[in-house]
Each structure stands twice: as C-alpha cells, then as structure tokens.
Length: 448
Image 1: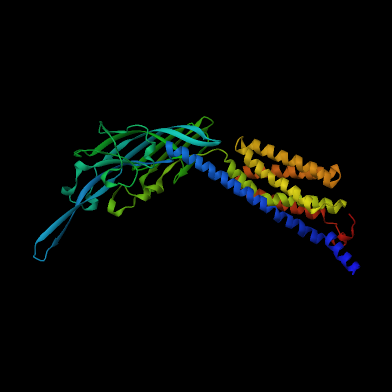
Image 2 (image 1 turned 120 degrees about the vertical axis):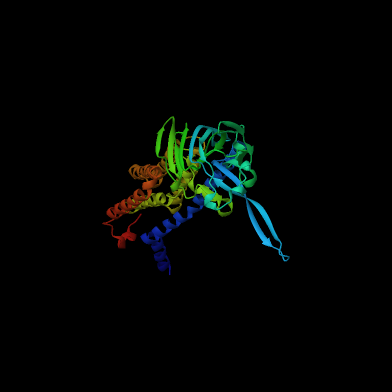
C-alpha cells in the first residue's frame, strides 16, 4: 500500500502533463485580479464621464447646427355637407419648409482644455457665419392655392442642439435688414432647440439674401448641416488632432501642430432629403443623416489604451509561464506553483500601475514606468527561484520583449490582429523547436 501511495504521489509530482494542467489552473486563477482591474478601469471611465458632463452641462454640450431654413405657413381647407345639405368649411394651419439655394458656413473655433479634478475636458468657442441666398418659396409642386399662403408669417429657423451654449444675441441680415432672433423654433416646432425670427416679408422679389452671425460654446464635437442646394462649409480650429465625422469627409483639409482647416463642398443631390417639404409628410430626423463636422478628442485616451492592453494579459501570462516551464524542463529546476502565482500577480499589477499613472502623466511615460517596475521585480524574483543568473536573464529579456511587443500592438491598432497572430505563431514555433528533442515519455523520471 505504501508503495502504491508513493507511486501515485510521484506521478502527481513529476507528471509533465499534470504540471501543465496545474500551471493552466494558476493562469485561470489570475483572471480574478484581472477582472477586478478591468472593473476599476470601467469605474474610472465612468468617473471621468461624470466630470465631463458636470463641466459641459454648464458650458455647452456637443453642438449640431441645422439651418437656416425658411418655414412658411399655409391654410388647408376641408369641407363637408351637413344633414341639412349645408356646406361648411374648416381651415387649419400647416407648415412647409424651404432650404436655401446657396449656403456658406464658416466656423472659427478656439479650443481649450479645462479640468475637473484630474480629468481633462475639451471645450471650444466658435464664431459661426452662415450666409447665402433663398429663392422665393415655390408651392406649385405641392398643389397649394397661393391665396392660402401666409407670407407675412414666414419664419427663418436655425436649429442648435444645445441652445444654452449661445453666448450672445444672434441677428440675421435678411435682404440687408438686421433682425434679432427669438428663442425657440417658433410656432412650427415647439420641441426642438434653436432660435427663429418672424420675417414679416411680403416676398415680392425672386431672391433673398441672408447672413447670420452666431457665437456658440460647445464641447467634444461640432457638426454642421449642409442644408443649401449647394453648400460650402469651412471649419478652422487650433486643435491638432481632429477626427472628421459625418456622412462625408472633407473635400480639402490641412492639419498641423498649430491646428487644422477643413472644407466640405456638398450638393443637395447627395444629401438624402429634398430642398422643400410639407411638415405633415417629412420626418426632420432625416437631417441628422447628412451632418458633417469634427470630433475634438484627446490624442491618447489612457483608459481605452489600458482596456486594450488588458485584452492581451492571457498571452503575457502564457508566454512567461511557458518560458519558466521550459527552463524547468531543460535544466532540471523546480518551480513551485505558488511561485508561478506570485510571478503572475506581479504581471497583473502592471495594468493597475498603468491605469493609476496614466491619469497623471502621459501614457507613454506611464507605460514605461509601469513596465520597468514589473520587469525589475520579476527579474529579481526569477533569479531567486531559478537559482542562476542566466536563467533569470532569459526570463527578464523575454518579459521586456513582451512589453515592447504589446506597446507596438497598442500603437498599430489597424494591424493589431495581424501582429498578434504573427507573434503567437512565432512563439509556438519557438517552443516546438526548443522542445523537439525532449523525451516526454521519460520526462517524469528526471530528478529535480
């Protein structure tokens, strides 16, 4: 019985297959601290977003500007005959929107970064100029009797997603007549945000010029709507890292360390909505589909980079544990499973250090400091558990190569899958080559 018990104990202790299984279980156990660190990243992201919302709620949210558009009311008459044969009529007010023939938008943006605690909040002030001309609204396509059109009640509307960001009184120069805007979108729309003006124009001519000056606060992004039959949009800003968004990229752009300029030339035929519509038959949410503009984002989002780096933790643990295990196999050094656990915990702490440091310094320096700390600690510990300096040197060089490799993956986002696949393939090929002459059947007979 004692011999049988001893044989089982020896098999459990020396079996290479069971050794691999136990090391794999240690790797799975290390997913607990990794999960806790991932939740910490999410918590810090939420805290940052709360700080951003706190500042932007008092300054101005991300801005989308729609306009201008001309809204002209008209009457729709309906009639019926009573039981007595008497004809009665009822008229209700409806609205039609008309977009400008030409639209030129110039946006001069001054960006700044403010802080709430340790968190950066990108804000901007912009001076918008909208100019061009309208043709006289044509109701003939809608089959509306000209006598039912209320020209004197026509309004000029400009939609602004967050009207709290408007810094000063806005005016329009309508046919060389300066008229101040009123808050809201007038009688035709009491749900959206923006401003309007009652033109009181008899519309006796065929074309009407306009120019609107608007001072606006915002944050994070600025989107503009190309509502002209032919629209020309220009944005200039002192932000060196723009992210152009919308259904079309700029026709021309110029980016430097001092800022950028971008230009869009857009024809109405590509927009997806008409130049004129009746409010009863049109969903204004279609205007969102043709916005163009720019996001003002930080060049490096430390939380996103940390979150991406955590995705490679299993590869890090696998490569490191395989390296130590190969040293065990090749040079007859015995490493306890608890020591594997300590090495793995040290590598997990890299992500916590990276998260904490990147909130206060640039991501690249946070990465260097965190990786050097873990490399130094792991190198010194591996010297103690592997007994010889040359063995710990192999582990240290391997971990250093892993951190360099990870940083390359983080920088080359478009090629991360390619580089990651090549790295895994190369590592497996190296392990197969190094262990090609090992007699796995008799490995358990070796004494450690």
